[in-house]
Length: 258
Image 1 (tube, rainbow, N blue to C red):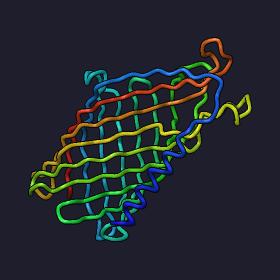
Image 2 (tube, rainbow, N blue to C red):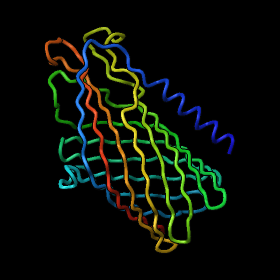
Image 3 (tube, one colour):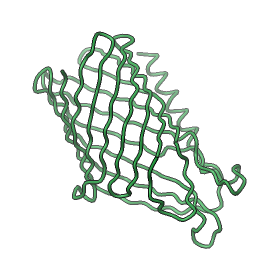
Image 4 (cartoon, helix red, strand yellow):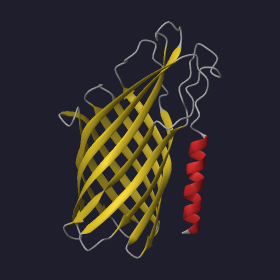
């Protein structure tokens, strides 16, 4: 437990030190908020004592829950090194119906779980490769880091209140490792910088129908910040455009274990 706490503190400190953006000539900031619905299902099952599989489909409804916006399809393979330590590679396809973007994501996660009494604490860290293979350019002269390389960190806790009810809470961060740079100028001056493009947290309750099926009802806070380079901002010949979005989700998700 002591090692877990030390590792958590070190991870948070490293992420905080790495979020300072580098210099740039010009910034433009926009901020939007939205209430969304996140729903879907996950099917999982054991192959043997060491291997298991997860397959999930996630649906996102935005514009105050009135518009279907995103589809996430993911497949995760879990290799259980020990009862509390798991290696989990994952591949995920994202279709954004609003922007037209199509994205592939490849993750490699290491998951450590510590159980004591009714409590279970989870620490997950890993790498992410995000490949935007189709997009409709929103700004002339736009430059993005693609593919993106990220570090992903997750800390969670849950408590078995009774046989069927299990409250939980978690927080997750994503750190961009290869920010976009201006190919026509000095990259030392015009680098977007290392920053956290996304921070999200969940608070909710798992209700277990039986040993195989359960449903989660939760609230999610999601702060996403995107940055890219553009040559047509205001009167500046070059600048960095930054867009910040805060989403509040109502979540309803179904799980089934074979």
